[in-house]
Amino acid sequence: MKILISSCLLGENVRYDGDNSSIAYNSSFTFSQKERFMDMLCSNEIYSFCPEVSGGLSTPRTPAEIVSREKPFIVKDKEGKDVTINFLLGAKNTLDLCKSENIKVALLKSNSPSCGNTQIYDGTFTSNLVEGQGMTAKLLIENGVTVFNETQMKEFFRYLKENKK
Ligand code: SF4
Image (tube, rainbow, N blue to C red):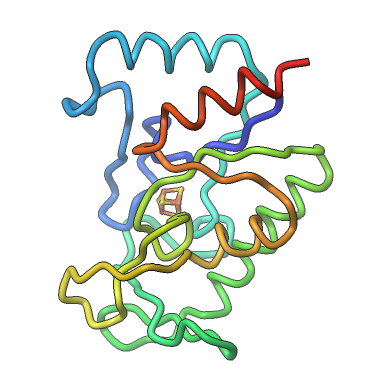
């Protein structure tokens, strides 16, 4: 199966701080969970993608949050610079990839202003999470891509099992 995965979850140093969110090195996952994750990577067609880098942002970069979650969306970095266009472009590029490659499922990084699928920071840079979706996750879901995050691995693996051809 074709699966889109946030590059940072695969260990690529694309995060705002120049680091990654590698599942393989994350101590909150057990060895057997990591083993299952690795098996999944080997037995599927994986598309690693970082919307923010694709949208033209550098790494490292100043962290950004969505300050207006309704249209017109506004995303600003911590220094007040408007980076909305980069986030919109990154979301569009991700959707374009899913459409061109017929990717129907994604495993995206939780809480990110791009990749978060259930929660995002509230736009005040105070580490406060609210219900909501990042710009990319939202666009993918609106276009029929099923999105999970790394805390939803059970559901993700169930989806893969049920949709195996
Ligand atoms: S935009 Fe997504 S893939 Fe890129 S660093 Fe943020 S969470 Fe990871």
